[in-house]
Length: 151
Image (cartoon, rainbow, N blue to C red):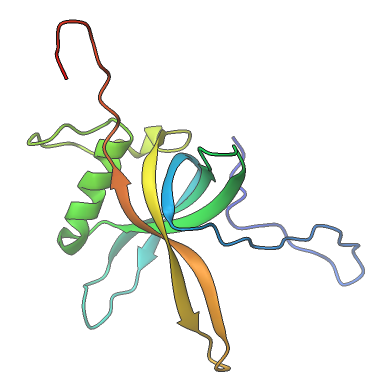
């Protein structure tokens, strides 16, 4: 798969055509697939030291009507965010509860799972109020029932 996370440059006289309207999805549980992952570095802040990060592009599917949308999330490779890393890797089936995991980032693109989304409201620098989606949490894979297991 070609790495297009950096985009492509336009010339001053090039023609453009693609438009995008970002649709905010309602709060809820969605199936997801990681469509791309870009490795990067977080420069650090007052709350967290400098560390690596994984910027995810996530296609979510509404289980009711099958419509899809795109959500972005960042996973920080920092002990303060280890809980979210574990949640994510459990969701995509790489990690089991109570067991350590050596993260295999080569298997993240194309991985599928379930997550909860919430509508996030924020204010721009210009004072305009806007909304977007945020991942509330990554969910465990649904347990499959087998005969003889009970309910």
